[in-house]
Length: 287
Image 1 (tube, one colour):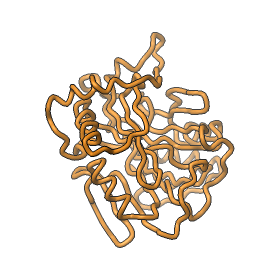
Image 2 (tube, rainbow, N blue to C red):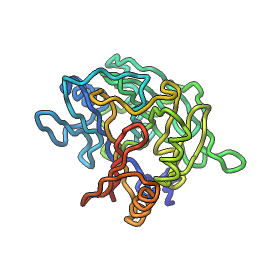
Image 3 (cartoon, rainbow, N blue to C red):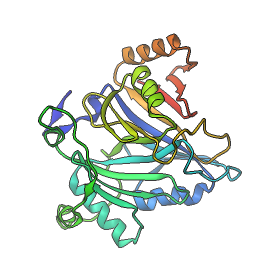
């Protein structure tokens, strides 16, 4: 793994998050939120779909359908999509932006590995906006990744903005991780570790954090709101798909082989492979 200036190089990870697809009931309202609050820009638009991102990459795909039932927070699906700011100063500028706009936040935490703030879009889809700390701050005495949930020092964070103002989501920002609600962490471990090949980077009570290439987590699954949840009902708003980008074709081929051996049906196409986790979320893998 290449680490420049002690910060994790996400592009070098064997597996990383590409785009996240949400099904929404009010496409205009949700799209406007992500543009005004997160600073994402339209990349492509049709009558019922908007792709948002930066000039460098698409990050979020919104599919609109007013007939969808509202999101049920007890179902398996999305806990939050985590938007990674390239620097602490970028995060500070965003915090100042949402404070001025009076955007309600749901929390702010120091996780040792990162500094993070939490909110939700108009339909209840969770959002994290965060910046990583240097990799050297992540590990305990035995080399394990240490994660915690401590109060965030917002005043100290804001000072790192250095008097500069928010000008939209940075071009080199990304979706750093996706945190899922699952019905059973054991089944989630089977799918995301044994099948996809992610490592268990850390555990909390009721949650597993899955990393690739030494990152603290590209994916996570918890049962805090969704214990024993089954497959998501059809026709419900919320998470539809997560795209995972594999660094090497060999990694993708190995996943396909493991899925076949496990009897898990997948759909292959020219771009890669799509599998569904035990709760119906599409995981689309490509190189």
